[in-house]
Length: 471
Length: 56
Image (cartoon, rainbow over all chains, first blue to last red):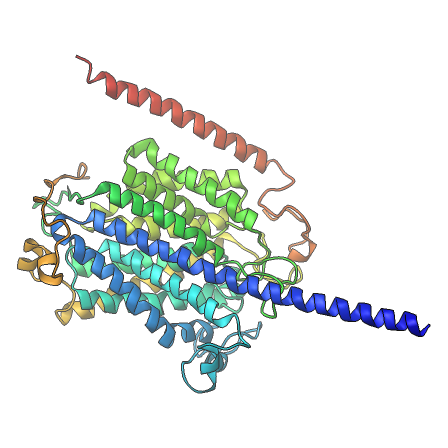
C-alpha cells in the first residue's frame, strides 16, 4: 500500500513538472507570437516607404522617404508616452470609468501604462511580465501604420515638422481613441452597439484615411495638379515598379498586422484556455484568416484589373480587398469575402476619381483605399454578419452585430479621423507650418530638406498629362 | 446570419462562418466562380481588341 502511494505521489509530481513545462512553452509561444508580428508589421512601413518614394517625382523622392521614416520614429515614442495610456483609459468614453471586463478606465491605465511610478514595471523589462512589451509593440506598430497611411496622401508639398505633428496626433491619439471605443471588450461601441471590426477596417484604415482627407483640404493640391478649369492632371511618380513592389510589401506586412489582432490561448490574460480569440473575446482561428485574407486579396486584384488594367490600382485593389473584409475576417465565408473584395476593387478607382474631381489631390489614393473602403468594409459586415454575437456571454445578454450598429461605428470612425485631421492641419496652416513655400515646391523638396540626391545621374521628371475626363 | 439558433458563442462547436448550414456558401462559391470566368472573358475580348488596333 505504501509503495503504491509513493508511486502515485511520484506520478503526480511528474505530471506537475510536465504541466509546468507546458505552461512555460505556452507563455514562450504567446510572447513569440506577438514579437514576430512586429517585424512583419515593419514590412508595412518598408512598403509604404517604397510606395511613397516611387509615387514621388525625382525632385521629391528622398524627402518623401524622410517624412515617412520620421513618422515611424516619432509615433513609437509618443505612443509609449501617452498613446498606450489612452487605449486602456477610455474604452467607456469620458471620464474614463472602468468597464464590465475590468480591464479599462483611467485608474487601470494609470496602474499599467505610464512610464513612471509603480506602473513603470509594466513598461519595461520585467521577468514576471512577458506580455506587456509585445502587446505594446504590436499596438505601436498599428499606430505607426496609421501615420504611414496619411503620409502617402500628402507627399511633395508638406513641411516636415508640421507633418510629424499630424502623424503624432493621428498615430498616438486619434486612432487610439477609436481603438479604445471599438476594439476593446469594454469599448462603448462594442458593448452598446455591437460594433465588430476585427481587422480594424474602420478604426485604423478609415480613421487614417479620413484624417488624411481633413489634412488635404487645408494642405491643397500640388502645383500643376489642377488646371484653371478644374480638370485634374496625372502627376506621374518617378518609379511605378517601386510603388507596386511597395504595395506588395504592405500586403506581406498585413499578415503580421492581422495576426497581431488575435489573442492567443492559455495565458492568464487569454480569453480561452484552448482556442484563440478576437480582441472582443469571440473565437477565431488562424485558418479563418488564411482562407479569407487570400481570397480577399485575389478578389480585390481581379476587381481592380477588370476596369483599370493598371498595376498600381491592381495592388491597391489587393489592399482594398483586405480592408473591405477586415472587419469580419473571423466569420466571413471565403467565397463571400472574395465577392465583397471584388466589389471593393471595382469601386476603388471611380471613388478616387470622384474625390479628385472635387479638387482633392490625394497623391496615392489613400483616402479612397483606406478611408472609403474602410467604411465600406465596416458597413458590409453589418449586412452580411448581422446576428453574430459581438462579445462572449449568454444569448440575449450580449449585443449582436447589426447594420445599424456598424453604421454608427462607421460614422464615429469617420469623425474620429476627419475632425482632428482638419482641425490640427488648420491650426498648422494658420501658424505657417503646413505647406512648403511655393519656390521650394517648384525647385523640389529634396533640395530643401535632404543633403543627398536620390538619383544623381538621372534627368528630369516625366511629363504631366490629363488624369481622366472631368465630370 | 449567425448559423446557430441561439445567439451565443457558447453553443458553437464547429463551423462558425456566415451562412453555414444554408445555401449561402454554395451560392457565394458559384458567384465567385462566375466572376472569375466573366472577368477572363471580358479581359480576353478587350485585350484582343486593343492588340488589333496595332495591326498594320
